[in-house]
Length: 326
Image (cartoon, rainbow, N blue to C red; front, side, top):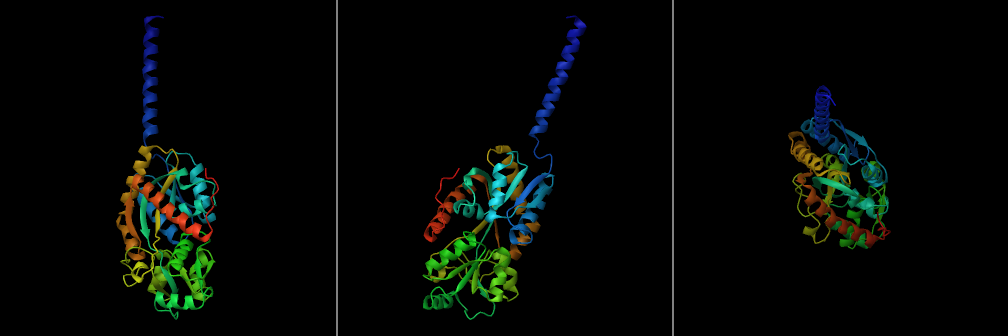
């Protein structure tokens, strides 16, 4: 090889290495395109409203769009299956909730919550027990008294069999030794079923009941949570009344298993900053949920604890599906 040929080869080799290096940098820069933000429930509900605002705020921080996509069905099963099977590159993010435990334990999917990675928790909120604004019960004890006198005659609506609202209702009614008929009417009909008289009461996330309560159309009798809510401070907790029932609803972010730690860390940072943004905090103050960001490790630990609680309630009601999970 001549001196000129050696020089040319060296130049081309250097260029190739430089290009390869640039390619490596480009691949390391996350994100460089829009991100799918998958919402497990339909448009217009509390999960959708919160999720869309969080996605907008995260987009401002990350410098790319987080595109909200509603994939309802199976109590969250459609979304979680989609997340589980997506490419683990950070460009598919799921807006999870307690449904990630309910749908995996009732058998709507053939995997457990740990088949995905979890970025962190954003917020949590109580699930109050509500009746119509002009209902004859002015306290939860009034409702319990009638329920015990007339077992299995009163009807309590929920979002669906095995949903978080159903489990909260089971836990509360069991603690009160109150036998009711549980009505799985769905998210869209839950409030309407109480307002129309089809159901006597319901359990709902606070964000799904707060506006109607402020308008006087619903009346909150009790909350199965640890502490009173700042937006509804006059509503007692179940424990205050002597009923040992606590089950809150949480919301957070999940990604496909194997998503790089650096990518999850960047998403977690954006999630936390977005959750504490002025607009998201304002929504929380209005709707009554508690912004309480939690990192991946702590959130994973919480999921394990809550999974045991969810499984226990389901087992007590004969809802738990014990088939082997992948």
